[in-house]
Length: 223
Image (cartoon, rainbow, N blue to C red; front, side, top):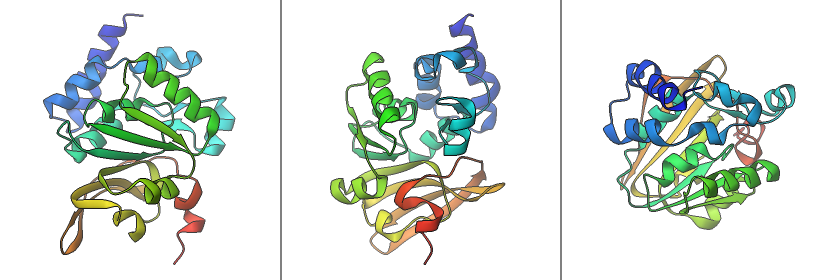
């Protein structure tokens, strides 16, 4: 398989037509080896417009351990408008690919992953890719956010039914938070901007993602 051609086709046929126009994002998606972040059995599908299981298919599906489609990851990165500086938190490291994109776009990244095995593999993937400014932490993303905040940007690499105020409070003034909010089949891309008066949000597009587990899981967000 010609990986370079497949990567170019992914950018031109999936990502760019889905509203991703930031040249920095397009360049990253066209050069970062996504195929090295997927399980070996799924390497041939690394550039496909699909959710990729991060372990045995049935087990991963039940646990929501899936790698998001490339067009979704690219659009998420574009929404954060990172400028190469700042401290970023990702909740839901998964394979480490989204963390690698963030690492290439920010000064320092902490990526939280509840599953210890996935966290280990994600950190290994990042090291192999030469992304050294990302630290994968094993544990609940909310707890890590409270311990390590505040952040210039926060990304939830999974869906939630709502974004807790306590997480928004971990944004610095002017900070941005991106999450997919809702329940299948309707989830809205939600971008929050924190300013001195509180937080404003927009919901520019729709997508679907597995629900995050831990403190951000739906059963723990009931008010």
